[in-house]
Amino acid sequence: MKHLNRSLPAIILLKWSFYILSLTAAFGLPCLIKADDYSNLPGAGKIGNQAIPYKNAEIPVLCYHEIASDRWAEEKKDPYILGLSDFHKQINWLANEGYQTISLQDYHLFITGRKRFYPPKKPILITFDDGRKSFKKHAFPYLNKAGFKAVLFIFPEATGHKYFLTWDDLKMFQENGYEIEGHGYTHNHLHKLSRSSQLMEFEKTKKSILKNLKKEIQWLAYPYGTYNTDSLPALKDSHFTGAFTVFSGGNPAGQDPFFSSRYLIKRKDTMEAFQNHVKKRGLHILSAAPERGSLVRKNEEITVQINGRFRKENLRLESGPYFEAKNKKRQFEYDEKNGILKFKAADSKGDYLIINIQAADEKEVIHHASLLYLWKR
Image (cartoon, rainbow, N blue to C red; front, top):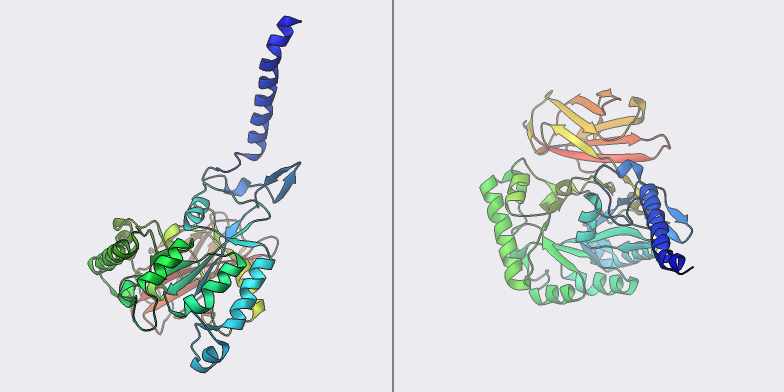
């Protein structure tokens, strides 16, 4: 009996070890996943008291610019000035739906396959570009009331000017848990700049924010949403972790952090449109040739590989000079086995060519991806 009592703790430990190993084999570690485990994530729910993560979770990212009184927004007619009442409706809907803002670090851990999110939490990033002064009066109080935080992408050249936040404002937001990141130094079009000029932009942005906020920034929002083939190496040489576009679609695990999607919110958006954009699924681009940001000419062949199995009849490809849904439907070839699309570059009226790809899965859920190329007229 004494011998049995001595062995009892060892037996219990052995049983618990076997139980933990069984759970790990079935569901994976509670917080960490390997980069190749995306397709095996279990669905949302519970087993006993143990929550398991959302299947095919994605992180939506919202891009605001300026929040103003309804009257001011209506008078200005600027598509990116949103009225206060519409902003309140959007934030209220997010809160009621159970969305919770996360940090950029959590975002990066998720898309690189090192973090899972669990119900009832719905992760989201709320971002504001430019650092407009109206943020302090109209957006900041209501975000706090809803329990949300935001990321402010600023360009230091404007900081402290008439319509822009001061460094003291930004320090106060930072102390309240808001993140301050870069939007270039001068808000110049990156697709028009050489690699050396972009390096200078990024270096000055980093130095200015470090000097004034004692913060080493790691993220950039592409000014005007544009870039070229020098942008990615310049960002990496400047030790950035990632960058955000203005292309709609969720950000799934495996998303390239330097081409993160954001829903660009506009004044004329209805609540239905807002809700649909927040729920919009992303389409993971595995490769593109020529690479994104390359200069292309009419009838030049472009090859894009997408992740996932889709039927050709469930794919749609559009291209043109517009970031919005005004581009024309294009013909393409598609290899269902390898997920490779091939198509020819068509005419563009502007400096760049936008490629929009839509793919419907077996449940008729639409997935979106967009790429930007420079256009040679």
